[in-house]
Image (cartoon, rainbow, N blue to C red; front, side, top):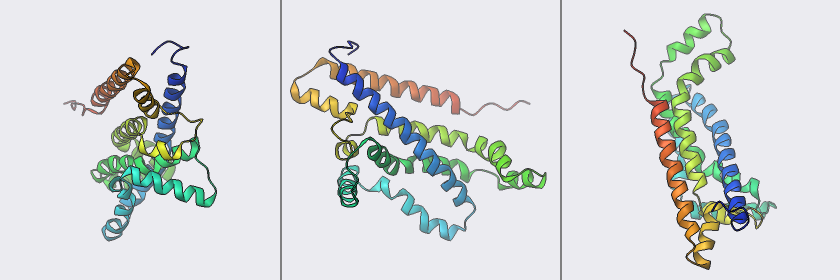
Length: 213
């Protein structure tokens, strides 16, 4: 697995998967945090109408979505590519980020932002010094979920990635079809270790701190 000559294709695929996952987290962050903040300021009736639309990609099977996205992309003239794959991952897994952040936002005290504005802070300072720090546990949890799901995704990448964008899950399937390559077991072990390490780090970072007397 670590041989740069024999496993050059796997290294490229791993690099592409990490790039797609990282950019998917960034795209989901840009979408989810403003959406969550906006939802907290809307009436409950409007939230009940709009929120199911935001969470719809979680219900739709990703295989169906990947095929539908490919058909629509070809219809409007966008061929499969790295950026189309990233966009697909943002749409499919972005709701995970939104859901994680919205759960934290529901427990926020709105009077904190009001107090910040009363003290003369601008909306940007309130966002930076009050709102975002309070939302950080949800942001971290959502980032972890989006990263792992994007790194391990097959169905969306299968339809939206071009021939030059080899991703790790598809490369693992190719290795299994060619022969029972032991590198598949090694890659699987590394992915499991990354997931467990991420869970331990998230548990350590997001664990509630005991309050000082």
